Length: 260
Image (tube, rainbow, N blue to C red; front, side, top):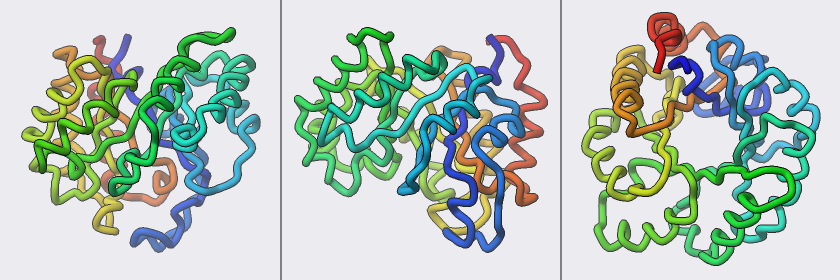
């Protein structure tokens, strides 16, 4: 396996963030094009409020190795997962689902723990094949209150994997400290890292320096067997001539073909 095989795209409908989060340009790049451009072969598809045709996107992803769909709604209603299991029947590269922005300012407490257990059971024991269940967790959401972290462990436990994201680039220097806490919270889970190529948290372009530092840090953890991979965010700015994307491409050109 190559390093590039450990990378995923956080895919959104094309143009979803035109004129949003400080971006005043207009992108036309689709998630599949984003994968091709970045040289990776896996994507999470996250509609973020857009009513998309799942089958059309899944057809466009035919040559990818791994596909995962966002399914936060399954927290309230696990039967939602039946759709994704059926889609996995037709598309063999669908391997997982992901609950985006799981904490949501404390709204995660509205999700019964038994629903997460049921969802895990549905995904792993069905007549198609086992599918993984992942969660998005931000660095500003843990490591602040030991009592909260202890409570949250019960919500982490049903998930196969957790993706650690840093929302604001100004918090990137905190990643090593946060990662040590993250490891303690996820002793039995797979781990991945999210890497923003646009600084959504501060509504401006991400910097080359922050992207390269993160990728080097994450690569070290992958090599040590402490994490599965990295998720690039996102296709919706990839064609706008941004330095952070160029930096990611340069890094991938150096490390992408390395064996792992």
